[in-house]
Length: 269
Image (cartoon, rainbow, N blue to C red; front, top):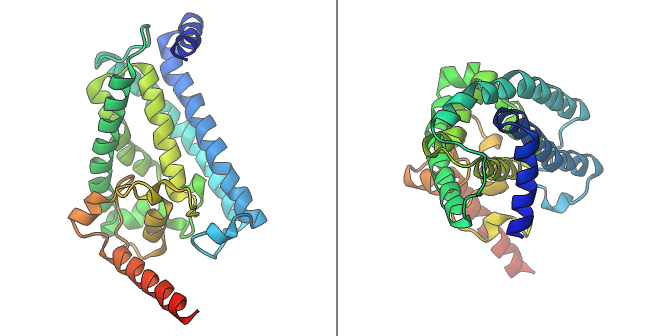
């Protein structure tokens, strides 16, 4: 398996230069993973598939979904792509490389775990700041236009927010100067995580059912349903920051009430 990956990587680095791979390659990979993972949830919502796993009964209109896609393409090409281009020299300066040999899985997994922990910490505080009155009204309210989120709304935000919270995603790699393959894997996992958190469905196979510290769709959907002053659940991936600082109390109370209601129904049956 390792030799296949290295052969594929050798093809890339012999046919494309570092700039093309780090900027255009990263952009293409991001767009592919983002839309391929997010678009199916639009179809599920329109077709009514898997509705028993849908967290909210309300659906978005086709017009609202199309508006989201149009804005996303605009923001991705006019904000995300330029950021990738202009940040390339910084990553190169910090030690990012694309040459062989590829890093070991131990190095890759350690770095990505560090990125997730650091990103979650920085995102939590940045997100809380965006929920202050002025910033919410003028910046973060764009993201909250969708009280019933679906996968693609994960990156639907004001350009200022894209830059502000995007810092949480890139600070880890910027500090460590990873191999490009590590950066790509981190980007793929982060995109899949944020799409899942906004998908609007809580499945039996959702990671939050198996990983106690993982937030997931049910955790973040609560954040979108409530008014900005009372929402809580500010973390991106994990739940411990909200637990430590008491910003998940409303969500926890709701979970207890739902659990009590289910138990009461079971006793009646």
